Length: 81
Image (cartoon, rainbow, N blue to C red):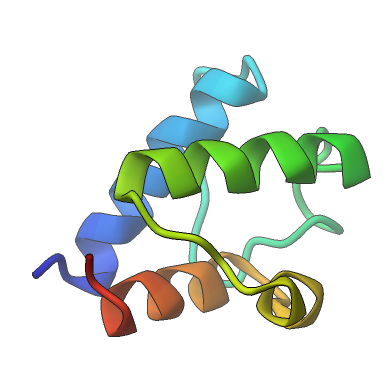
């Protein structure tokens, strides 16, 4: 099972690729309000890429309620494939 830090590293790589921001640094508190290109359209792309990478599906209510990268990491750690 992946640790929270390992998931953060993977999610950071996904964000860098999908947002075309190779130097992007994320932490557990990073959110759409702190990441410049993380808008509503890119959110769909990011969620889809994360789901593909981890072979999971985020529930719709979780997607709406998640506040930051830490929430994504916590969900993935708590719901391993």
